[in-house]
Length: 212
Figure 1 (tube, helix red, strand yellow):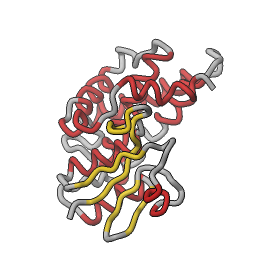
Figure 2: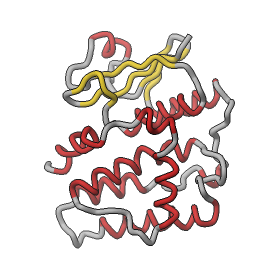
Figure 3: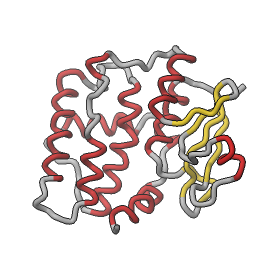
């Protein structure tokens, strides 16, 4: 029986996957592990009644495993690893937090209205740290094999590239060659191509936060 998974639908396009990086991470995990799944696209501005009944918090992603609905992408990906151990996506402990500050740094810089508040530099520092790690250990975070850390980072780096490119005309510096190669590698994976939100949906998703 396929796993049931609820993810965000695109705003204005209810039958298309929306721009939630945490939903995307869960879909990537299901795809990489070749777990059959049934996809429910949830319009977050008009949630179906059945969805709020099984998931009163109303957040995505949630998956249904053994007749139980489970929220939170960290919990979900941990559970999928436990229930479907092959292929293993478990990273070694020393790699588990690599790149973990990139997403909050990106959001802060994206929303920043003050070019001197240090938010750009903070993001550059995080990307440089990732570049150094990849230089020593690449092409993925843990060498040749993709792990859960890569699947968590891939959607976030995609959002970073699309949103900062659109709203700030900003790109990852060319000098960070390992980060560039890593993004190309992740974005060209079949499972990523299959499950990513369209660029214009990513832009539309961030617009209210940028203009707030």
